[in-house]
Image 1 (tube, rainbow, N blue to C red):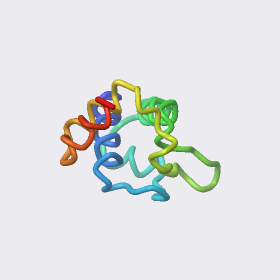
Image 2 (cartoon, helix red, strand yellow):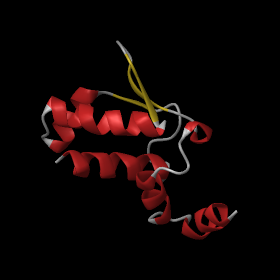
Image 3 (cartoon, rainbow, N blue to C red):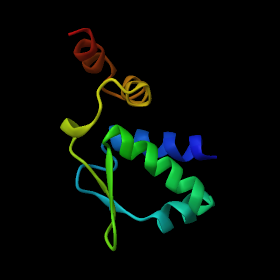
Image 4 (cartoon, rainbow, N blue to C red):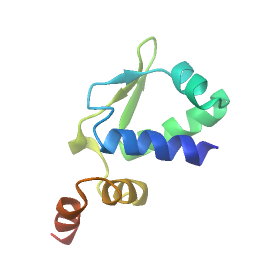
Length: 95
């Protein structure tokens, strides 16, 4: 379940559906996926380790600017190559 939540949120962020500065809460994700709080926190923790989100107390989870993301993270590479900008990301990886 955590992988599903992680992959959906990761793709939404990389596709721009959740742009930099967007805020969402753990409760919103729990409700959308019908997932336990621990599952959602695990997924957000992985996104945070990649640098894609920053959890803040009393605010929620904030999507960060793309320049803060770890460009070598395997999850991020998979999401970027699965998106609409595949060829641009392949070129960037080759550089």
